[in-house]
Image 1 (tube, rainbow, N blue to C red):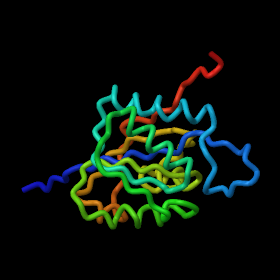
Image 2 (cartoon, rainbow, N blue to C red):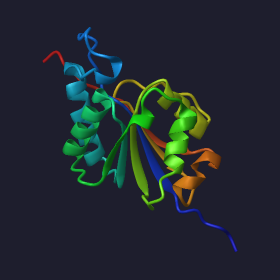
Image 3 (cartoon, one colour):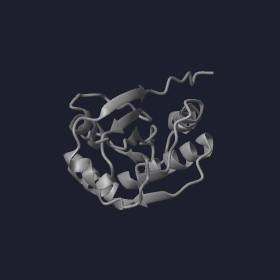
Length: 171
């Protein structure tokens, strides 16, 4: 008798473009700039039009990631749980996997909002392929696992789609 996995969906999102125009702010507290304030709603709308279902959002607690998360949720109509985590700021892909592996609830689909180069490294670990993550870049992955605790030993994830914001901000 064959064994069937119940696939999980992982959405990896790099925070939207942030501002470095505030010399008094520490990196963690940098806000979105004008471009980022447009990128995040665009991706939120894209999630909605693509009918991508999200059961849980896990985001870095850095200001730029938190604001991106709020704008995405607002524009895709997401009203579920959001966890802002200091563990997703200034760390590596191995730790992102560790954080995901501790999720005990049976969420079928998770949106993880984080930072580069960590997201690119995580994507490489999961898919065995390299991809550059622009700001607000969104990777839609399917994982052949039954629960999030299995993500560390997951065979290669399948890339469903990679979305990049295409905005004309000059108008």
